[in-house]
Image 1: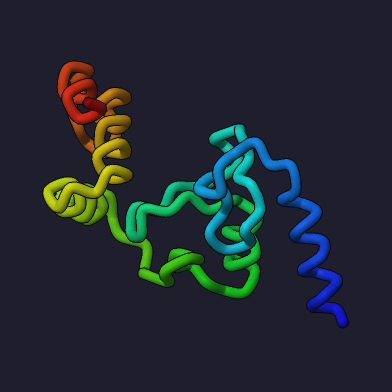
Image 2: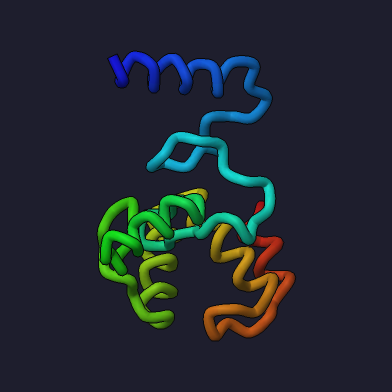
Length: 120
């Protein structure tokens, strides 16, 4: 009976949606907040996870990725994982790498030209 009520509530939440379901947290299936500070991108699985799910996982003692449960990689490992996915043609990884070139993060030199090449 509780499952039916929860399912009905989920249907009501998703009724009249304007945003794509790709904008949902892959764990709780609720729309991701529009504020980028209220969600985290996980490069291990290339998923955007809401801070609520990250917090819930940490409260349970999980310091790994709450979606794929991969141990949190170091920055150097993260960049290698992203580049491997870029080489495989993953569009999410390509966009993510472009944003890092644009902002100069992950020990990358800020290179807007390279970022634009990746965005195209």
